[in-house]
Length: 253
Image (cartoon, rainbow, N blue to C red; front, side, top):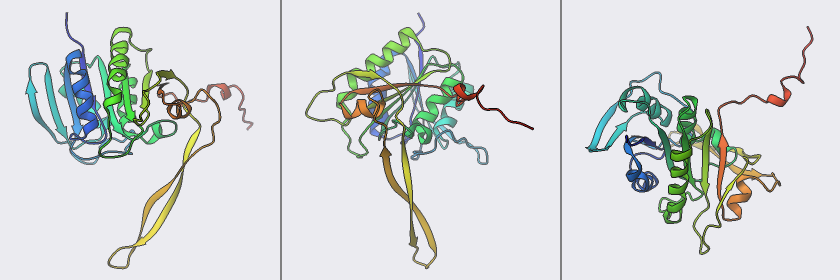
């Protein structure tokens, strides 16, 4: 029986500890092709490279495993895998484990989830894993059993066409994770604040800052699950249509 082909990428770059953790957890589940960027691509969302050449270098090859370093974005890396590097369409796409949460509105900005949504466009079962810890020394050890159980479930059961999973882990604490909750995306947002600064030559520049606001009081959201020490799983797709309003909005000439 042919092993599934698993494409792994991320947005924190090829040396990120979260990527290394993800590879180590799933390497035995199939043939692996890792395609990751040389530099951090956080916040790149669904960006693609159209004005510069994409550079690709094979850095590791052994039976059932290949690893490529690229100059592209996470979405570039998935496209390269599908079209050029994998040799056939991947059976599964995994992205992460991201340093930092991609819950709620963060899915819009996330390069981690951009790669996953790109997989969903071609109806490839795809999962993004993120940890609610932005520290470069983040502890991923409590995610192991959940990464494996969710990945194995998707390999065995698949996902509906066009649907991917946005999986977020709470930061490690002294208490064990309580379990998994399949939930909705919270209605939260970033309130941007641009700090005005001067460079050494006296020229003005701006540095993006801000704060995260979650006013969603519903109990079935990813933010509520994470706050209660659960793994949140949000089924997501690329259809942005507000279907309930298609027949309600009317225009006159």
